[in-house]
Image (cartoon, rainbow, N blue to C red):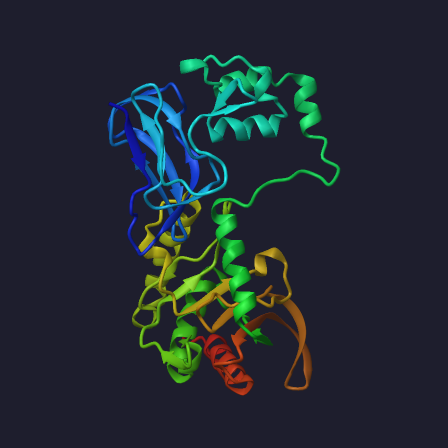
Length: 361
């Protein structure tokens, strides 16, 4: 009997997932618990093992598709199977095209990308189904060349982390009336290797005095959070990830450094747990290495404020009526003006700067 594998409930209240990458191909024989598919959720990427052994007879959902929990993703064993519960306008079972060709959505997508007419192919798969190998074999030099002649440039769908970032940023831009405040900070003598943990510590201490920046807007009420779990923006090859450092107010700078390194390494390797990526109350980002003088960061919705550190470099400043060189950088705070007044945001920013310049954190 063929086994129809459905997208399982991945917990955390998630109702859908994106098929990030298939780890098997049609016709491949797999054992139980062999890696089957990677699924991207709005929290993390999960590798799902095969619940059954046998030959992969039909891959029913193509990479990049976002489907609800319960959707049949793949049929293992048998000569192919009919699937149910797949949303979208395209049929998800192997489909007869042009009266002769049969192919799964994954193979149809590859054929579209390579400019191959499926109706012209003789399938080598079970029951004459056209396989991925058939399509790639038919994609000769001229066909491939023609398929890449796009007048407006290369077209690449939003997928994985990049899709989630795009959706998140669009929500933040749509929902949050944002204002950015910027001021200079004197980092002379500071150990820049400890910059991010020191900034996190300064923010957590200042947030105690300015609780409206450590809050949520919930309908017609402001929820003041009594925990200091700060997000740290990490750039990865897949896109921007914001892991969360828990209980920043209760940790020393050295502890924060170790935790930030653990989270950053996990973010770049794609090995973080979902728990590492949710529930932040305020976010810190540092873009100085990108030579940005200052930034206007986007609030990490549903938070109400974010702080960014700009480039730190020697600059001419006036001290005691004399022009001297000091290592100066910028601190920028973007805040939700529905919750935070400009004067309070500025006072918070100056408090953070005072803590950083005094060396007290």
